[in-house]
Image (cartoon, rainbow, N blue to C red; front, side, top):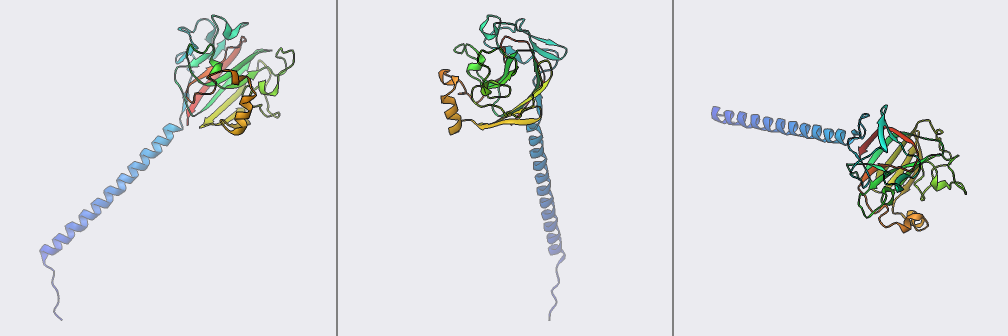
Amino acid sequence: MEKTILKPQFLKFIGLLMLSIMISCSGNKKGATEQTKEATLEEEQTDEWISLFDGKTLNGWKRYNADNIGDLWKVEDGMIVCYSEGGGEATSTGGSLITVEQFDNFELMLDWKISPTGNSGLLYHIVEDTAYSHAYITGPEYQLVDDDNFPSESGLRDVQKTAANYDMYPASPDKKVNPPGEWNTAKIIYDNGHVEHWLNGEKVLEFEEGSDDWKSKYENSKWVDYQGWCEYKKGSIGLQDHGNYTWFKNIKIKKL
């Protein structure tokens, strides 16, 4: 049998072809690695907590429907303090403190304490507009209140107590809340209508905004008379002025 002899030119061509293929595969592998790194970086950025309070100033905050914050809200010893005693939002100097930045889906955490017989709240999806007299008209509320001593002739209903979705859903009766003057930690998760309220490390409420159950509760709540309430799915975070001394610190948010 005649033996086939490969010519040098052909061998050189084969060698160059193999080298080209190896370089091409190496480049694709590097590109995939870089894409993975970029995706991981995006996930890390998404998971980052954003501080809403620098501990020294009220930068990034404003008073609802007001040109200035005034003397109601102040920073003291690393805390945001609501120096309110009496009228609350109904007064000319009153008004909830809201973030300038707006959020849609989020996880919010902060520490809070309230004065004896006090009342306040954490609001979200607030829209600032002179058509609305108060922040709570547009934004749902995680209730903060002195459950045991708040002055009320008929007593507080469960949907009006701490960690409730105010006038809609009560928090768990097994919740653990520290008394006035002591710190508590609140967390709100809002993810495309799925809402969770946490108190001192425990989930105390969970519901689906817009569900049949939610609609039924809405129809039997005070909110049915407030045009604009819970209509917005992106808005400011708010600390409510309800006419009582309240303290907040360690305020942070994670965009979901």
